[in-house]
Length: 602
Image 1: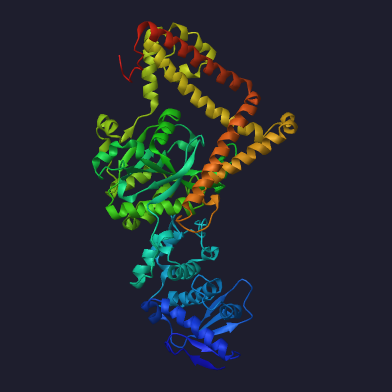
Image 2: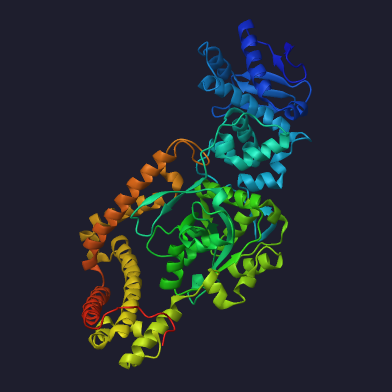
């Protein structure tokens, strides 16, 4: 075997010249020189002496290189591709990129094995890469990497060692790596005390935001400079089995455009956003067994605060606690960046016990704020996580000590059950309604409630209107689920005549699922979107309009097939609303000044 030392650096790499022509030796030296020019000095210094490069024809089909002891093997076709390049080929040339990537990849393995490397065993790298800590397995990490979306090379998911090698390729060769995987770029730059040239990044962090009725879907761009604070947002529990321990979220306190970050940003509620991990349910009902076995995808959603408040306080009648987290300015930026990475790349599995909303929120804080990784915060319940955040001095729950002040300042959003009861008390005092609680009133068939409506005065009618609207909102949610159930799980009599409808609803659910998984929109690029943002947003808008139209058609076609009790309930509520609307307009003309009474008003 004849070995030739590289003249550029005899200690970096030798060439096994056996069976190589002079032209092939020269091309090999070019690849070595181009690679060495890109390597950070600490990386070059970590490589073993006498490392030899050999071209091979017998590597497995999917393997481009191997790093063995003092030898580095590369597929010979890479050399042939390099030699066949156009004379003016640059770094973007496919053959150039392939050869450099393969050599950098194998040299990365040698660096990782060295005392100066050990990157694949660094807990911080594992956090960023996706081999996350597990709350019920102290000291252990996930066996699989769930950051499977928008990856530059799926081989990075094979193991932490391959993740390091693949990402060091992109760190050195792609100027956009700093924008698409900024946390990893900073990690590698800090490790080497050196960084390659980086492209200019698109401004802000973008999230795909979809409204509840799919009327529109677009990208929400959050400027980190407008992020004033992050709160731990806890939806209080109720009697439902899967909601008993509450739901944990993070509230982004985003300042209005033009407002300098400060306490007044808490008044800009219309700009506040919520990060919420949810089990995306593509079938017709939540199954406890599937939730225990991880059959549901866990995704990170960005939602408007007002939507979340309505969902929990009006529909589910649950209070919301918004507890400020003590985070530094740089930590706010890193947490937002990590949330964006999760939004675009994470496709986890939702377990009611081991990987629920509390666990997901804990991992986001653990991975997104390095300081918190050393705090004993792990918990499998939302309330437990809040208690640990308080004990660690991270969460300031004193904002809830004064309940009235908390309501005024937006630290607490009370469930609408109290307001509904207040409205009901107004109507009950005026009309002598026999039920003591609003829940008993709403449980009545709409036809029984309707007998009282023509007798209402202005204040009682306004209160009953609010209650009837709440009843409609809850009944429509039940109807949507019933339509899915009817079309996807029909009985024997329905099966034949509803086959076409079942196919239609499955198609709608498939398109709806794409809007719940941003990476499913397709497009070029990996990591955080950059120049492809406009194309992705156009695709999202097209899909959302189609889903909205499809659901409207399905509702219209399927409503007649609802159980008779639900059809009657919906029709009865709509009739009650019409009756109240007519009654209030008449009273307003004769008495003037229709005004909805406030909660607690006499």
